[in-house]
Length: 316
Image (cartoon, rainbow, N blue to C red; front, top):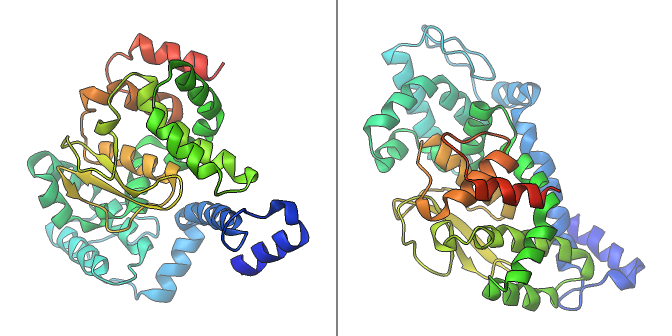
């Protein structure tokens, strides 16, 4: 349906046609991403979770567990029921197509226990015990619950507001030249209507340059990580075709790759929150800006005057 719609679009309006390929690849990707972003929040709607749970899985009969659809209640849980929830989570994660509503339910029921576990175990031990933390949507759900905000949508909206000024300021400083070159090369492969999406990618990657910080401590393009804190690993050209993964303690931690620029940033920030990781000093201002001004959450400790000054400029 995507192909049919995009083909008909460029056939009727020839000026919208891409300069390369079949003529509608950029439209196909934009529409696909739009539908994906619209579908993603639906899994949190109680009615949809109820439908998925009732149609795909039989109810569990653990005597001590309070079975609520949204999984927010942990009343009546004990060591036996918590163990059952972990086993169910681990079994579901090994399936080719895990039921995300079940994973979110088990994560919610083990939230208090997991917080204590995280404080006394390594990253890999935690991921082995709670493998649902390898799923971006689960990480986002945990952070959304913690902050009471839709992190992905908040970052996407905020970046849309400040992207133009980020690019202009970095151009003025003549910083991030490699990124600007990749961006310029990619523009020729897409119709002009797609350039706004490319600018959002460019602005996101320019953020650490804006604060005169080290981008290698937040993302790497075709390189291995140099820091143990969460880092986005990009294989390929992020403006054209690439795969996105996240490494923590130099290890890939995501079961599903992320292919959306705002989603990877939201996932990266979620990993910091879920695993309670302190911001790396090389990108502390960048991450503090994202947290306070894009995620609407006030970081612990004093916010740098540099961050406040830059935010005032970007949002003015």
